[in-house]
Length: 132
Image: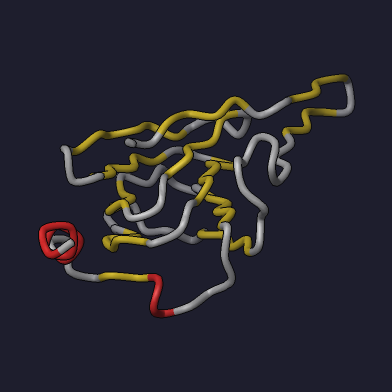
C-alpha cells in the first residue's frame, strides 16, 4: 500500500483555526510518539530510510515534498496544508525534501523510538522480501 492523504478535522473561527489528529481516528493507529522537524535548510533531505512502523506526517507550516517507495514504485506527495496529513505505511522508504522557508513538520508514529525499526539501505527491504 502506498501513502495517502488524510483530511484532519478543522475548526475555523474568528480566533483562528484548529486541526486535530487523534489516535485510532484520523491516525489509524495509537499514537505512541510525536516529533517535530524545523529550522530545515531549503536543500536538505530528511528521512532517507525505511521505517518499519506507520507514521502520519503533517506540514504544520510551510511546504515540502515527500517521496515514498513501497517497493512497487515511487509516489511524490506535496505537503502544504496543516489540515491534511500524509499517512505513510510501515516498511516504506521516505525522502522528505524541497522545504519552503520556515517549514515545520509534525510526525506522529505508532511506536516509541527504536533503532531496530530503521533501515538505511533503500534496497534492504527488497532483499528481505525476496528472502521471505
